[in-house]
Length: 102
Image: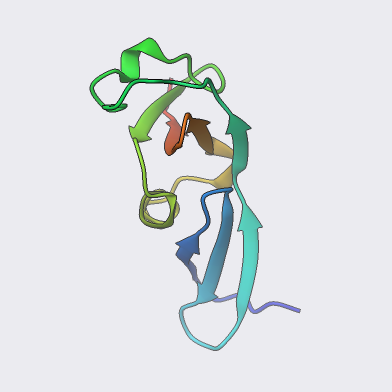
């Protein structure tokens, strides 16, 4: 059973498992964002080359070229729903994509 207080994201693994904590009690839960294996890339600066990569789905844009633990939690805490966030591997990088309003 989970409480009905406000939840906030505190951590995310490279593979999209997000830890959520309650703002008022000790409740925690895990949610997941989609993880996609993207292209193998020899490109060293993913952010500069972001327009070269196809998004994981229509309407998604790259939000960050690394650090899902920070960037996925930021998106969730900013109001994005988990189904509108994807972590995609590009070579050895774990990029964060979010669906923008159309």
